Image (tube, rainbow, N blue to C red; front, side, top):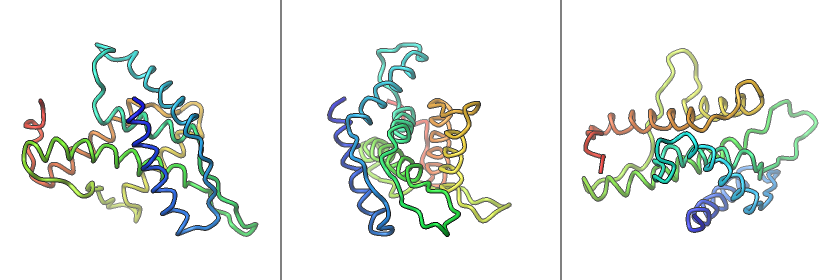
Length: 182
């Protein structure tokens, strides 16, 4: 697990640098140990619900665990101007980006070996009722779920949404998902 934690943390550092270029008020708290503890705590919880706890988790569940661990660690803070009435959602954007990046990397390993192709990004459905793209809907839903005790961040629910996002993307790329099984 140490290699995975280190790889994820490298992605976190890269993503934070990009975010800080766009907003110099963002502060990064390097809490790698807290992230690792949160990751392992959530990993243990998810494995309790698996038929075989010794079996490796799929990329969707691991990505969900990454997202929740980053949110629980709260590694970003943004100093706000008094006139700002916006909420800082940087931790939610970062967690979503890093989780999706992990999932895409894992999927691309399979796609490359089986089909010789890669996906460069996920297809996010377009809403026909509002101007928000699905990426924004996804991280905003994380924000609201995290803020409401009665909703909470459920790794299995998040994993299901990630699976469907991947399913839509592969469908749009005309890739037969049944051929991805090992």
